[in-house]
Image (cartoon, rainbow, N blue to C red; front, top):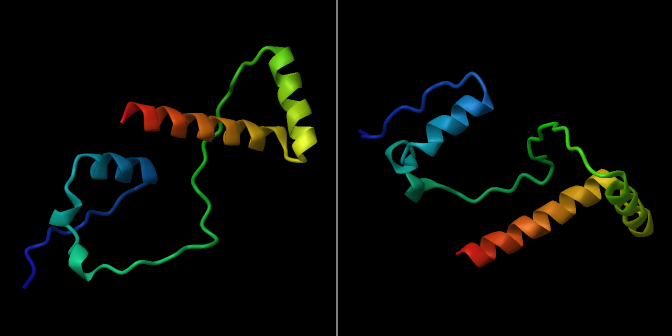
Length: 92
């Protein structure tokens, strides 16, 4: 018989995120029985935001995006991710 706690049902991802933020998953999952799995077609959840930029910055981003043949919003996400990774490497 297992001493693992039962994982509750969640109404949405935010509720689940809050739950796992404060829980030790080893109380709910026997990680010794886990297996690696790949989800090749899984897309990360996204959230729409409004971001005000000076026009000249947006124009420059669009120019760079055009040269790279990528949508400018995708370029912004790539730039942000690169910078976040850099900051996190320096912080730890």
